[in-house]
Length: 123
Picture 1 (cartoon, rainbow, N blue to C red):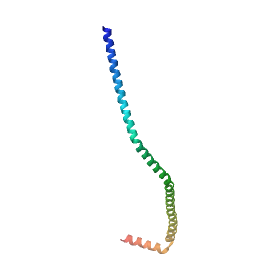
Picture 2 (tube, rainbow, N blue to C red; picture 1 turned 30 degrees about the vertical axis):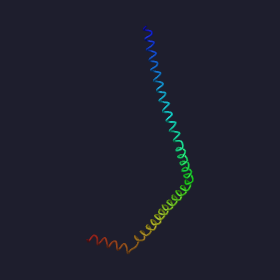
Picture 3 (cartoon, rainbow, N blue to C red; picture 1 turned 90 degrees about the vertical axis):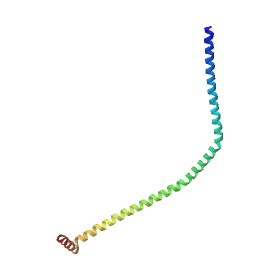
Picture 4 (cartoon, one colour; picture 1 turned 120 degrees about the horizontal axis):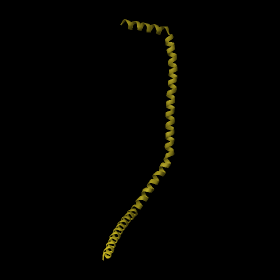
């Protein structure tokens, strides 16, 4: 009698476990079918998006050399402008140096500066 009760309990528990496994598999099957339907509906849209992306990348590949050339010319122009300003700086600095030497040697300017310093000291 006890053996029969234990057998019935084990049998019932296995039926409960089997039903839980079957219900879980049915839910998984339902979600897989929904995902398959979603992918079937999305497949044309994905193809359109991939064609659009491919077209954009082809255009970028065509435009990239032009952009690189324009960046190179801009860099060259910028380098020339900076080099030009640097050369003019050295040129004017050299001129300024020689002009200052001539002003210092000039007797008229030394007299004017002494006079101005005299006037400054008086005031």
